[in-house]
Image 1 (cartoon, rainbow, N blue to C red):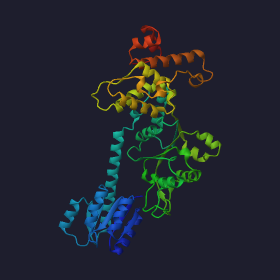
Image 2: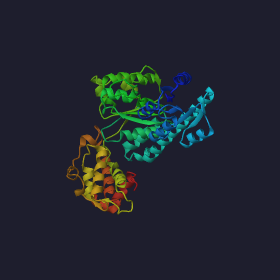
Image 3: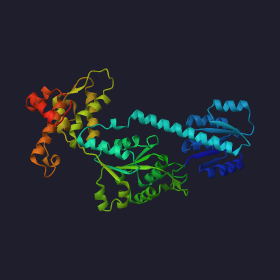
Image 4: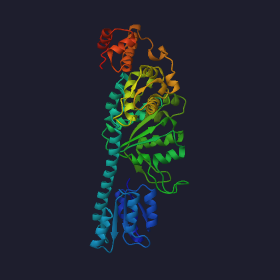
Length: 454
């Protein structure tokens, strides 16, 4: 619902405009002075301002200038009963959206408002798109070519085109929000907002206000109306991160909103309808929480129409070389500097470490190494002690599924070892073969067998 602020010291005009524009589906806020108007511009989520030109104290022209300092893109329509060409020119020079004289034609005013709101909406969308393109939240920002990641890419492509809710699970640091963004920016909603909120980072009261918004005076500290994430995400996607940490009372309210796609702001009575796609994520075992009555079963099934499981980094070690290369490029700064490479001993440490913090931890480790050695060879001493000193340990229970035949298990292990050796040797086959204690012709034979391309 778009919010219009009307400013006029003649209160009968406030009543007339509210009666005229309210039935059009707009939320109308009125004030009879410029000081209160400026406070609303600073503190409330406004979409357009209509102000009279001549008012006691601060004039409408001065209000226009102050509005543009606070929110340059906010459209402001000027009204006056004493219209002249000079005043209109001055208002347009100060970036008013339009200028209308009293008494005004109702249909003309409605059309100007409609165009002003459309222009503002397009401006906001263009800004969001520019930010999204600069961050490149596409498949290319999710790094990995392991079998598990290829399955995830396939799922993203399939679910992106639907309206279905998607539940993304995986340990912290595995990139669940990147996957949510890839779904959104490859969907028909890509030109509309992607809004995220961490449900585990806020108290119950704050989370309710952030999700659904609040009216002025709804609680202590609510000095102005505020739109919630559902309202801001209208037409787009809302990502509920760590939704498993949501308090039980809010789970009930969220379920009702998901069923009806309508809600009331905290302290409000007006029903607000939205069209929002929901993506959720959690690092908890939600099925266990459902079984233990910590998470509502009906809400879980509403959120979990489709599910994507993101594996921990220790289960996709084939992706470590690609991730390392990506993070080196990200943090090495000046592209003209010497090429940064890792010594075999450093590669061995990265493969040996179990990465409890997953991709996020790997990124921090590589950033640290690049800072310590910005233009040369990264050695184990450039890595944190727990990474450099990790001891190799093969966990059969983790890496070999139950009942897997021995020949199949050995082939999978052999393939992983060859890929790791090639990564450590910068794809020099002779060096990789030497590391594995085999001949170059044998490693070439194995590469052909496992379809390993370099």
